[in-house]
Length: 285
Image 1 (tube, rainbow, N blue to C red):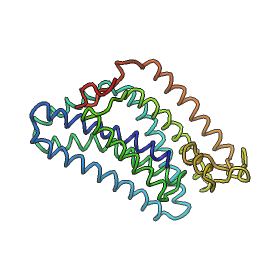
Image 2: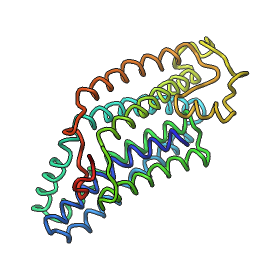
Image 3: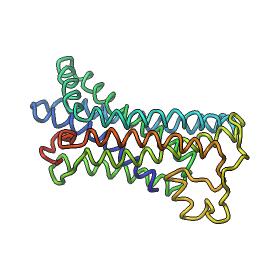
Image 4: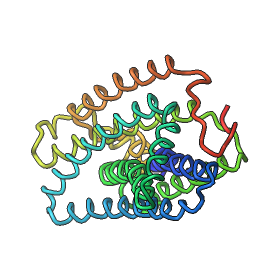
């Protein structure tokens, strides 16, 4: 639940912030009549994200056991690349996001209602598809698709929407730079587990070698079925029987990516990096 909650919270807040910026700009410029096509675009992006997650599940079932393992492994590697890029992109682009979105919406207002809906759709769909892909991959390779895992994802997204609403209404104050730094670190840790899990899937499908060449086997001391084993598996991708390739892959991803992320984070820290959510006024400090 915890890992999926973090994914849902982080990615959900990014999407919610985009919607908040667009809505506040329309309200500030007196173009409230444009909110309807904007909401239609947002709803279409949400539906697309949900459908995309369902398609991934259906394709896995249709491919059979080995084909499903290969598919899950490949999608897992793609999801890790995608999320890694977006984590760094968000840190670099956050200070310009508000101005960029408002500029796009200004252009769309001149074109017409369909352009407003398209602007909202593209902005939200990018976040939604990322969330759907990474969430699906983490659930299939690490946490399982049980009610606890799904509940964590739903609660994370719900918390993100609530937090953005409170920011929009100026009911809370939040340093978004620090928030994205902390959740970025957690996402990198989860992504390392997904990367290791993708390697495991490809080893089971006999695409990668070394499935039975184990770095360690602690199934007696830390069974994956235990609550603490489940927590470790969901957050860091722990497996009681871990091959050398999985362990090396996990470390080779986590150490350099986390080091680079924290180094860039320390260079870009400070008040100027705090992104103002639209409508929040001085909600972040």
